[in-house]
Length: 58
Image 1 (cartoon, rainbow, N blue to C red):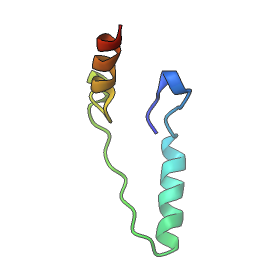
Image 2: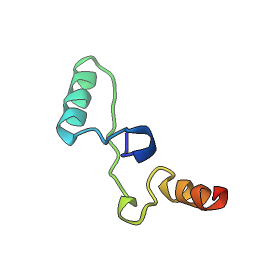
Image 3: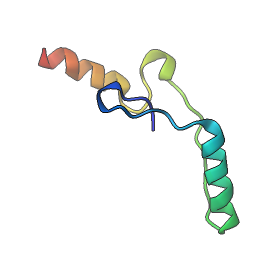
């Protein structure tokens, strides 16, 4: 989960993500960890759209 200030969500630490992936694979479940892109310009996972909506509702 990416950081969402309004909801007090924080990004999962990478070590935890890799541990989870390892456990899934141990259980025979295929797992892919996607490379993070766009967070430096607020374009990851709808962040830019969320900012646009904040402006629209003001």
